[in-house]
Image (cartoon, rainbow, N blue to C red; front, side):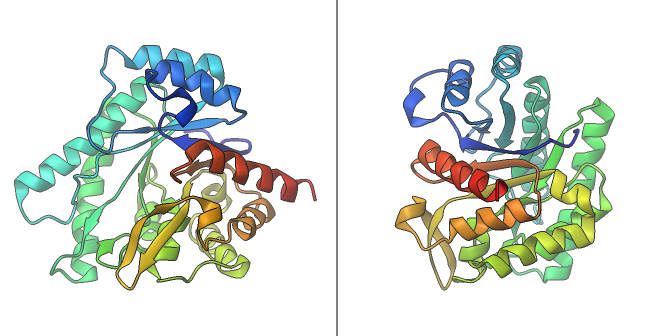
Length: 282
């Protein structure tokens, strides 16, 4: 879980140019594009076996690619049904087990829904579940970051204050900051340099510089409405001011991983990387 020395850009899943290739063959393709990271998409199922994980780990090590993953969508850490809660925790822990075998850096997930609970009771429920997750990982010696993600709808648990509070309490937990979700959740806000800077300032205020040296973030264009996120878009087809976002990340000397979740995953990853490097040189 060492801090990274720069901000690496990568794709959410196998890039289009390598579609149809197994993960271990897609990883060097990401490096050939000039990118530094790749997120394994476990959103429908954990699709890397224990037997395959060492092969993926070796491919990432050889290519110099840092791996993250997105745990399954079927998670609700605020569920009042024991079976659903236990299954949600198991999916996150199982994702971490495989990513540990893959030599991964961090695992992100959508924490859950408020449903009819108050924000306070939801936080308490999610906190207790995260405590169980961290305890399980420590018992097994799995040392990677656990990342509850900022979510794209107001009905979902996962605003920045909630995630920072969780991160401040557990030493293996940091937020996954999804800038597109931030933008959609607030129906079009958080889309200017001062607003992007305010997000990074809140991370530094709560978690210190270490919080900005261990970023796991997502960015994409996004369609949204009053109820929040609808679907992802390519950056140039959206209203997300990604150039201002890249300037903020450069100005705050952010380190870690930024994953492109646009439909054109590698194109927008390269677009953001180019913009970021231009601001970093100024």
